Image (cartoon, rainbow, N blue to C red; front, side, top):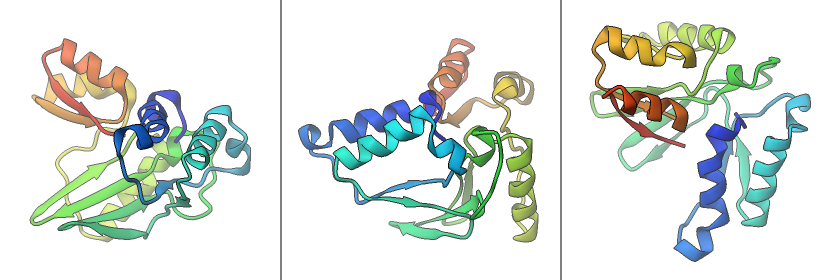
Length: 171
């Protein structure tokens, strides 16, 4: 979704691809509601991609592709997913690499989380812990002894790092 903390790194990369020799084949984004498409951040993202001459394509539940040996499958949002919350339509990716499965949820909220949990159950995918609530990530990491977290929010990673929990930002 197009919250500033999620798109700032992507905007910087798209704006500097020529200077830095970066190659991007296409930009995959979740399809927001018509109202959300009018959002200033969404428009900034789309216009930055256009200016960089990067094709954009919507990604929906069920879409999948390979990146090397990794299979990347979108499990949320489904096509036509409607919500008033930008967080609820966070792109959720299941990455399978060998025996490992990684789930990237962004800032899913309850409505989107319910859809993801149904998909995991339907596909017999077991998990130890899913943390989607931005508010509780630090506390859950402390309580559960989690010592490394991937997240798409710079603020979250900075908060974790200040509390001696390592983290990496992905955009």
